[in-house]
Image (cartoon, rainbow, N blue to C red; front, side, top):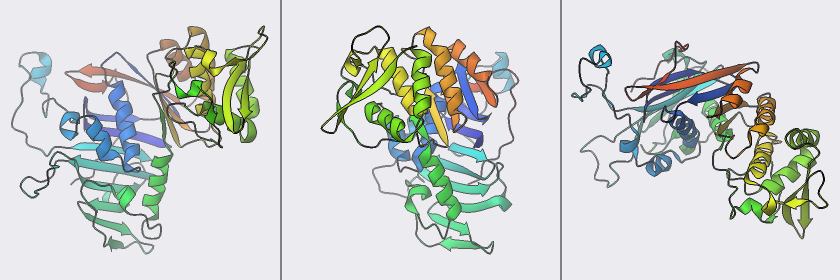
Length: 387
């Protein structure tokens, strides 16, 4: 489980160090940085999937994702006696992402390629300056296990000595994807698997043209697709190898007397829902957006293969207020098997979730364009590996 999430230099997150619990509820006004925090978490996962550079490119490149404010915000500026203005930068440009955990922790530091040293046309691609894996939540040189400086990579062997890994790594590629020998760096492989297991649900489609409203070829689907297209196969998988009773309870909790059915024909699966008082089940094409979205969240949260971390962005969207308590119970139950991060605008959902044991409320606010924790929230100790 992650104990600390750290982000520096990304959009409005100039330096944000968050303590995490089993169930984390992120709230705040529009523009406070909730989406940036969610994206930063996703970027961390992308390092282990080989998508870090392409994900930053979709956001406009590293030059568009860096903190756009001054290097420091002085007391006079905060007091209003001096205007905000840029000065000559004294430090290197950083975009840093990391997490701390009781077993293994990780951080990556990105910046611009060295000027004048390359004839490549891709000069705005981010360059990975350093990556580290260490034991325990707090970085210390003595706790380092895997260390990447520029193209060079080294790891601690069984005797405790450093071993240089001869394969150089391109500055636009992560060591997480370019080195895979479990004998030379088993801790890095463990961190990679952790990151690869993280799941994100922020684009569940329920529109008229959504694939989930049409029959789909069905295969065993223990993990719901990020757009929910394979919901029928995912629910059938839960019925066969997952928590069938939990699925029935989750549906009845939100829609008393209702039950789902998966109709199959020649390998094609279609979702249907039988509701009290109706003579026939309603197929996915007939269900409301809110009903279909809730069933997608059920499929995601009752997965037979729970991830280490599952993030939900505004899961309450399209749901009637009467469904919020059922959704909160569903998320709380999932938090028994996975660490959960929920970004929400719904005060009722947030209040219900933070009343659960081992939960944490994370309220974000903006101060001179910088995302900060509201109030006097506890900030855990954190040190970034130096370049």
